[in-house]
Amino acid sequence: MNLLRSERFPAFLLLGAALVGLVVANIPAVGAAVIAWSETKIGPAAIGLDLDIAHWVQDLLLAVFFFGVAVELQFEMTRGQLNSVSKAIRPAIAAAGGVITPIIVYLLIAGHGDTAQGWPIPTATDIAFALGVLAMFGKGLPTKTRVFLLALAIIDDIVGIVFIAVLFTTDIDFLSLLVGLVLIAAFAVLSRMRTRSTQAFVVPLMVLVALAAWVFVFRSGIHATLAGVALGLVVRQHEGMRARHALEPWINGAILPIFAFFSALVAIPAVSLGELSPALFGIVVALPVGKMIGITLFGWLSMFIGRKKGEKPELPIGDILPAAALGGIGFTVSLLLSRLAFADHAVSDEAVLGVLIGSLISLVASSVLLSLRARHHRRHPQQGVERIGVS
Image (cartoon, rainbow, N blue to C red; front, side, top):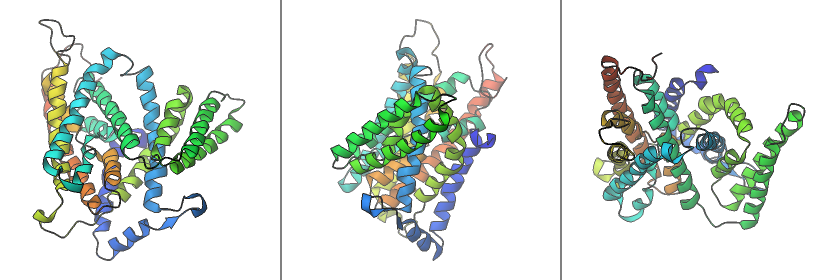
């Protein structure tokens, strides 16, 4: 279990699952059969839950992942790296650059016709993947670099959640939404009733209420993963952190790899480069290039805020640059956004390939930059400065 709670191994597992899905999808005969199987519908049709297997993974399993993300957001905004304006302002400005610039880059390449709707895809940062790469290659970097990246990625998650809520909501069934909100409120109340004497009754009831809330949010027309977000934000913090700790091995070891496998289950188009969709090229460029330029530029500018004359910046641009490269590892949320932006669209598979290629380029670039910068810090240590992986 400790292996699945680490930062390095889950990153390898996630990448491996995506590569397996891509390879399987492109094996003659086998690939077509597996893709067809992923489209098999299961579930009670009477209540509108006859979803195909891939959508069960995307809508239900990923809601558990977003519950964990929301619990972490709640903690960071109350007790952690985002609990004050002074702490949040610099990573927030850097995150803004990491959202705005990739959108501009994407629209310059693919902003014509139907492909323009893919602009949200390259805005996300995969926090688990980014921290895993940082742990592998950033030994010796100042701890404040990790803190900056963590805060930046958390803000990116908030942006991704907002995009999902605002952009991918269909016609709303307000009655179902109202019932879902009541159930979410009941979940919040139950989490505050849990004690040693009541947990045998309260915990199973919380699980049932959470599942019911998911069903009604799904039926309301709002993307079902947002049920997980809402539950994670309203749960009593202590109970939420306990639940997140218990769920973490399952999220890292099963939910995210399964999602990565199904998301990457796409056949590589047997066409020339000129016949590929602009969406693919837009994502491939926007993730590594747009993120790096936006986060580096805005992050560097943010270092001048509140800085006294003659005072050194909190982070030099040399430390911001590898963090910016890590920001281009979109993966989980970008894969979800690609499926949502191009739902039932022929471009969907190429968008997924764009996310995989762009994230892989960012992974390689960030690994190199982190290694070089970590080597610099090990050769020129600053007294009294905490460093990643150095005690």
